[in-house]
Length: 323
Image (spheres, rainbow, N blue to C red):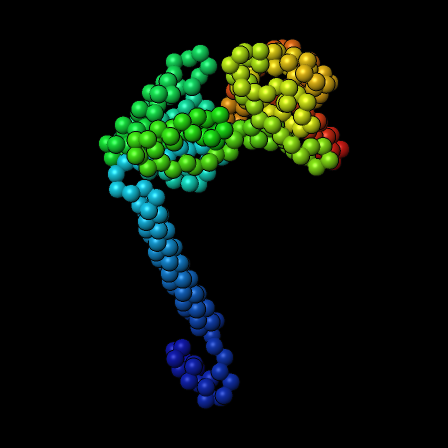
């Protein structure tokens, strides 16, 4: 008997008790199973997307509640440390407040690339802070942040480094307190430790030093207005980190040697403006002014004085041996 239709083939096979599905039936079954798996995967992905959406909404809601708790109805000021200039080194909290701001008062060394992502209606006030350049005075900055906050606006005072490390953030916090304006301080990664770290220099190192002194080099050590105890700095056992000291570098090195720091102390001068390009000059303390002049290093730069500077060369040597 010759089968005329596939359905007859199935019945005939079943009557013999040896059912053998045809190749076409196998393919149909595999196709059907594959479709079921695809549908199940689509449902699973849809559920995951829905769950992520709900979690995102919950995070946003919690963030809004937190913001309202920290900043009551009306204007507010946040003193935000932007870190050493690179836009990816600002804190999460600092970036969050920056994105919520109505007004941003920004310094020259702050991570200005972040301003490109702000809404067009955000007011940008350039405070400057360039050496010998056109800058707002500190009193003018205080007036701006207080006046905008009193108008009910959210103000971010965006600084380089940390607002409370040579950032005059304390003065701005006092101005806000005197005016009755809510003020939050958001710490930043200070360039005193970040810039040396990015150059491969730790400011402390076990077996070398557990002390580090951070000083401002803005004022000449011989100037009567200097409040730095250079005798204590020179004779201390630890690392010395000098910020804003390129213009007074020759005077600083001379004073340190005169007051007791050995002339051969390893020293590094690191220029890092946040662009990713870095200049590093190393040498003995006595020679570093001439080396820096030869390299034409300009501000902003960080000066590191101490035996920790040798770690950079040791790391480089070990890497070369392994390569």
